[in-house]
Image 1 (spheres, helix red, strand yellow):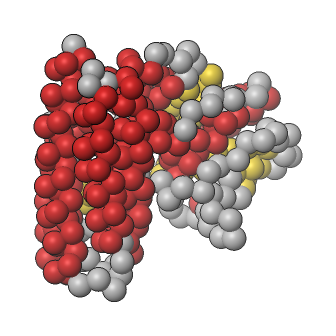
Image 2: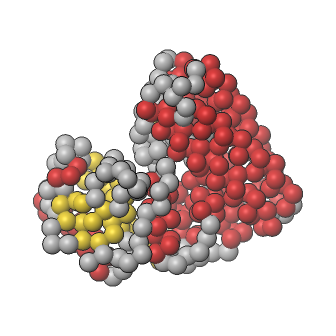
Length: 302
């Protein structure tokens, strides 16, 4: 069986591509910008101190999953599994996912990428391939063995369920509070060698200075996080009528649009380290100003 009309959006951020697909499945008609903004993903940026491409995957997703409740999407976690997970543990998760799919509820996995699980057949789950024309990540997950994952088994499973949509103003306030907390309390949202908020910029600039700015990690972080910041700019234009002073949205939209463009420039593998450092310094300055403006808005929103 396969869920009709369930497709993953081809975003660079595959988590948000899967979320977009689940929202479409449930007929929740919000814009891409609103999903990014209201979920808080528009304001997240997680950077490893050596610019590992794992940055978009290895951070605390719980606050974003909680904010997605405001958009009408409930996410149930089925747990984390690895190469040593027992056959019974794997079977238990698989039974829950097959039951969910039979009930019309999309599922999601994250191993090397986030993928919607769109259905199942006699031998495997059917998994979305987010980018047309690319064979990676795999389109199936064989029951029991999960052989498509090879030796790299570090996987989470989730079920997406329809929830209750809250008022857009309340959703906006919660998302903006998350944006501020990411910036003011970055260590509460990251661990180990990763950094969020201002620590993300510190890690990124240090990694470029150490010679890590020309590899896959710099490119991929630039692609994912520039997408998020671009959506943040669009989000502020969309929610302007919800703000105490609608005119406050335009400067914020401009700040985040600029950050999105600057981070996208950092994805250019041909750009010099000096250029990337300049882009990052300018982007950070925009974010500092934006966060101060958001804090002022939150005080007015009460």
